[in-house]
Image 1: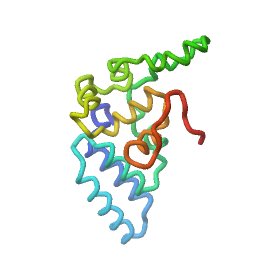
Image 2: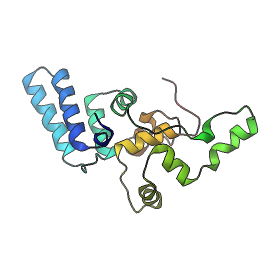
Image 3: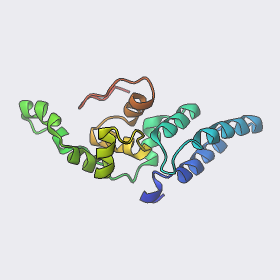
Length: 164
């Protein structure tokens, strides 16, 4: 899977249909689950909305963290420099709160212009790979963010990941 395919609906649909083929051997169950998923996928933009991505994975009972780490394995996002510990406790406490929008955009690999439009509320829908990028930038589990945006999850806190 190339980097350009990572946030595309078509690529995701093919991947999901292959999972359905493996999980559901009963023809009727396979047909019903495929139709249910395709109906949901038809509501997405071609870039794969995070809401759609999350809904499909929940319906299929997939482990969101594991799925994201595999599906987005080529994602180039990285942890924010401010979250790396340097041994100075005061510095480590305060520094994570000093990130600029540009630093977060760069670290999460969300295009700066789009990041600013999301931040201002002009755009409402995050793409699935953007949510994954944010999880990498802040060192959160992907499921924390998907649950926060689309489920009933609490707002993640910087430097705190839930135990497995």
